[in-house]
Image: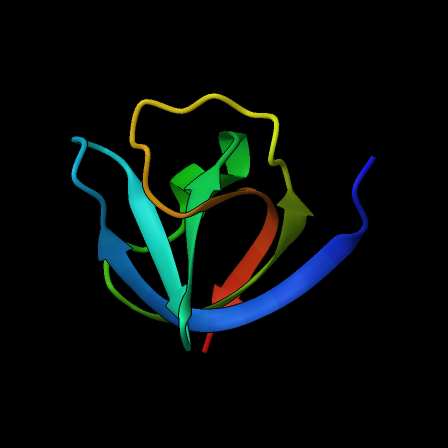
Length: 73
């Protein structure tokens, strides 16, 4: 299991309907998992989660990050 990381960035829509990205500097994460549904559609958030490089996604954007917790700013 990958270690937990905490990332702060700006939320944006991905190219696929329903996909959400988190842009943190030069890195873009694809927010995945059940808790990703709690991420607001826009704005700045801090997300705690685990990178899952083995996860196949339909969005094909960003580094897959399985969301454990999300909070504003």
